[in-house]
Length: 203
Length: 203
Image 1 (cartoon, rainbow over the protein chains, first blue to last red):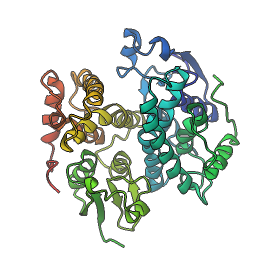
Image 2: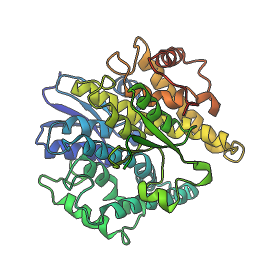
Image 3: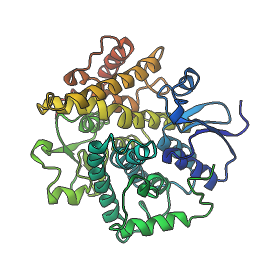
């Protein structure tokens, strides 16, 4: 049994970064176990026993219980903290944006970044073009929502902002330009200015 | 202002069905507004004013507020009901399975079904093959989890079951066979036997 949280982590993954960022902002002690996706370490029998879906992040609680899926982990950690609205409707709106992130944002913006990191830009050119269009559409939805708003939900920094920040702030690594998204750029700066913020490169 | 819930709905969509099913099981009165995806009705200026991401389901509360994303809507409606565990960890596990559904299950199993309904099976053969493999992988994760369990979380029917049932029970319409997934088939029967269950064809 671990005495603090243990995070099965991959440093450049935005999904993992979400959890590192929240753990840090909550002031919780945690130990990182680096799992190299590129070397198949999420698909070993040992890791699949921990997460049958073979993905990081995976959080091991101090009592040994395991929790997967970045946004479910954020929800667990933020429960009853200032990182989640108390109001029932606002909490659902927060989840709405987190669902948007995993369905309409991450599969496009994060996936293109991953392919470019992996050196697959040429062989996947056609798929990248399709994802480029969908990724910009997601950024457009964010841009229009942020007009006149400081944060995504309830005018307060929440885990919806953490979830959306993770891959938006490194979108350029996938070839996305934020030039025409000034509201998004201003919001990124507000998120980065939050207390105890850490960069994605910090373990 | 509406006097009851108004659901912007598309009958054959599993994501919409999740919400219809829960509203019915909760005994809540609601009005359906059919939005025909195939005729572009989620992309009209009028609809985009309601949901800038251009998708159904979209729930209008009795006070006029709007909520999108099927799993966020389920969470809102199930809050403080027997359809959601009270325990913080189990609630996070429930969300874990709902995130799994939207990321690893729906984009493969539901998308292939949609393409086959639309008559695009031939022109998308290569993409369908890739999605077939990922869809069966998701069913495998469910099969192993359900061994020795009645429901996905906490041995009790919850919105995690509703979320996963929606596209699993019509997987055959996308050419997926459940022959080798006996635990999944037994679980489908248990879900269908819940009080006030309705079929996807019922508006």
